[in-house]
Amino acid sequence: MSPVSFHPPGLRFRAALLRGIRAWTTSENCLLCGERTGVWIRLCPSCRSGLESAGPGAGCPRCSGPLPCGDCDRFLGPLSGVIAPFRYRGSGGRLVRRGKLSGDYGCLSFLAGAMRRSLRARDLGSGGAPRPRLLVPVPLAGSKRRRRGFNQAEEIARFLGRRGGYGVARSALRRVRATVPQGRLAPEEREENLKGAIRPGWDAWRGACLGREILLVDDVCTSGATLRACARVLLEEAGARKVFGVCACSAKAGDTVSGEIPLQLLE
Ligand SMILES: [Zn+2]
Ligand SMILES: [Zn+2]
Image (cartoon, rainbow, N blue to C red):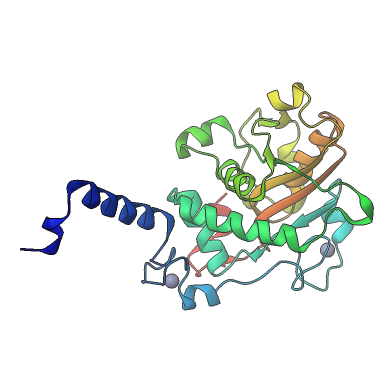
């Protein structure tokens, strides 16, 4: 007879509950390849070594782009800065892809954790300016959102908000029409493609962004055109004071994930 059968049901229930909580709170398999890892370790050594840092220390301190950065001002436009912990190739891109295409919230939560650490490492409140405390996700067109069932930027913002103690204005922006995926367009066509596609949403109308420093959240930024279009609406129509972009990955045209999926198919 197994020793478990001597336990009163209460104890057995508590043991099962503890096992459940442990399985729920700890990831014991690598998020990307499924290989067993230790408790609380979410990527195996091989997948971790595929993470390419794009954050402070590795990239441009203003735009997180690769160094030397000669294009900062044009890239940022109305944005006060862009932060991205990872480069969109290797494991960084695979995490985004799994999160977005397979709805793997473990990956989105992992990315949000890395974004929070990057935000902490870079002092956005320098010179006595208040630190941004409000997150605004980049909106997805309604049709795309219905197809996917969620907006990955919004889910990342939710995780980031919960972990970093930020407020989230989920509907500060809305996309009023579907646009051609930015990755399929030439850089000069991208701004045109987005014209009038992003408008203030309910949270902006009720004044949630007025006078605030905002962190605009997205999964990947490439040319920065989407972030700039959103920032313009927040600054000019929603009354925001400053807008910083915060993305999981920064990508350069031609970045691929494990050599399989070109970036433009993922947008
Ligand atoms: Zn792995
Ligand atoms: Zn730069």
